[in-house]
Image (cartoon, rainbow, N blue to C red):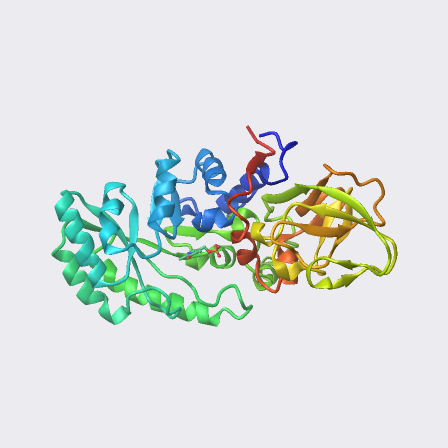
Length: 387
Ligand SMILES: *Cc1c(COP(=O)(O)O)cnc(C)c1O
């Protein structure tokens, strides 16, 4: 795609993606499958672009949240396996079966409903049983597992393919004892399940677990944020550095950049107010550039008077509030900025770099929230193709 005539666009670097994937292929044993989590429009990166790159580089299973996301994957012509990790309303369970999606199950009612749909269709359905180990989000209580398995014996069309859990406190801390207590509960319950299902696929690891603890890898890892080249948290980064006594700066390569073009340049006299609410007043004659992006695109409103963008390889501070579709930046000390010039909101320009982590922290949130809120309307372009 030609970006010359775009107001704003997101670039996805294949080279960086491949580098992240190669890193995980090195640290995860060969017998362990790499599943990629592509919920929320592939963490805001673009489900179409990410599945294109992931598919071509050998990812065989995608994890999504909803049936709608799974269907979108199929509409894109992608034949890889898809695991739906969120609830599917009973009336739509037949869609899960018809498309051979894998479905998370954590209660007997869903098992019953899925079985009825499978019997009606005369097809089978693959499920992954999710265990409650202490996150208290989704999962079946370990005490109820026996009863569930009893029921499962009577529903031959339902195939128990996997069993999994999810950690509550692995990325927000450098004390991983809670995660290990969850891991123990998982293993204890799995031992009981394996008496009848010896080949069941076990998985627990999100990015932080996969990066830090090989004992969480089992048969599959579910990698989200780190495949996009971002660390789950500062604590994970620090823990990794300590554990591997290495620098760690280059292990993950952010794959996303976000760019826009200057719409208008103007001179503003001293002591004038800029933008809604008059929250910024010029202290000198000021050159402003107006950029055609705003909070509706995912540039959080809380970045007003906080963040900066890159123009001509230099930092241009945001002045005033972020509008729905526009921001104003100060270019007084950056000569020769013209309408049409490229500005970087996330990524590199010259020697400067704006990370998602920086914007997220300025906006009072985390990188996960910041990227998943990048608008799906922004065109995505794959760059740095490797082949
Ligand atoms: C989102 C999610 C993941 C991926 O987590 P990351 O920290 O982004 O790697 C893994 N497992 C489950 C159940 C999830 O909901």
